[in-house]
Length: 330
Length: 294
Image 1 (cartoon, rainbow over the protein chains, first blue to last red):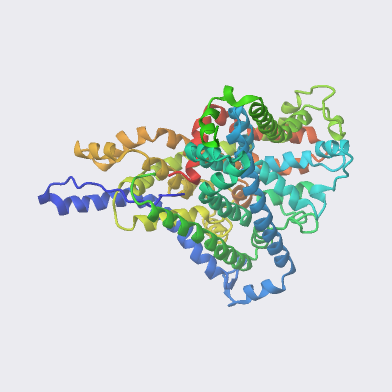
Image 2: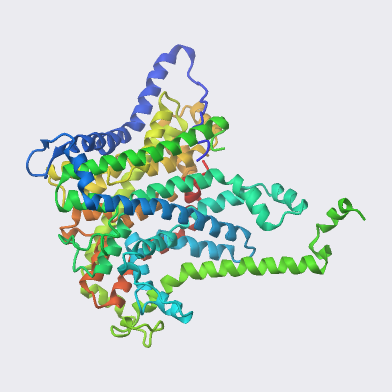
């Protein structure tokens, strides 16, 4: 995300006598173009962000009017065992999923960048799964990693490997979800691949003349050149991990064999709350138990954490744009 | 011969000598086998799902990987088990209306952020980026509360309506595309007396068509794939379910029938594959624009 904050100089075309009128008209044009977005931002981000914080100090069940209870919701978090489980699970994903996703996408992109034939086909096959609905992708892996008679277990069996129960095993269910997320990481791969292919060819040639092999060239030239993109990948993956919801709910409900979605909360987090992520617990509290105040308190915590991650990314964007002030889209 | 003189002779591959050639071949083989393995790794899960989808009810339960008989009728049978056409209609309603609304609201906003000069533009752009990064769960409670007091929960309208005003990701992506349009075209239109609206419609929109296509594709697929939104607002109203939401309970409702569950899984992926087949370049371009290039 470099140079996204550049300035574009628009030459003034208005004649001197009508300048102030032209300026007023210009202001009106800007306003007209932005009005829907501004209203939408206020309604769907501005208001709910403030309201979330306000709700977090209340007890509210959607039927009776909210009742002010101060910091009680926040105090309750420390005694809520499942809240701590949810935090631990989400932290697991923030660490493991972020690391695995960036390393995996980087590895795949580096291999594709070196292919001489079949590039288009391999790239397409790697990217296509990322377009699948998350529900479908999770079910695909639920089939592939079906315990005992699923394809993965059959293949592992050929090598004499005894596989775990995957989504039904609390120690492996998060690994199963991570596998799903890696399968659909094609968008990050394409972003990294574009950056790898953008590295000036002369740098490689110079290094080759100095006798550097492919691995050393990758380490000393490719990696440093694409580090801003990798940084983007890390922040992007952290935000993805913080809001991990669909895959966890679908994996949990499929593995538990729950009969249906409506009203049945037993499957959430199955097995043994190992897939109970922070957003899943927030959803359960708010929209299954209708404890809106507590859900709002959790939402406030989630907001603060994702705000820090976003601010970090935006800070880098600004720095990058100051470094190369100028041309649009440089 | 010194080492310095040696170097230029390495340029043409034919002169490299047998040892260098051998190493190059080995390198080629290694890279391409990994590439092939990766391609298989990404493709095989779908192949397994497909093979399971066309198995008989009893075989889908076994560890066999290849169907003994090909039951193509499974794809049709799935339609008897659940009102899939209804879900399909709901998904289409959500995705098409949201995409249309997004185009109406986001193109002018993206233009104002990319090509108009006004004070506070950078701050507004940062707000857009911030909104884009915000987990949807953060604002879910007050929004659900508001839609509920309007009596609109239990329908897809709380999900569709916002697109007619504001969609952060689309504004961001469109802005990145419009930035790449040379300023001289925009200036020329202004010199010729075009109003900003005319400049947008006659110059910018036609030139940004690939970018607009990519943004529309992403918007369509995002809404098609959405799970949290439909679950939140229509979870208790099965006649309003989207395909994605229905799929998550299909496996549970038809616990025994792996083959049918997998047939429906494949059906939900069709739009993505079709859109990708027709607009592969837009997808790839759009994806690179979201990340690094601006």
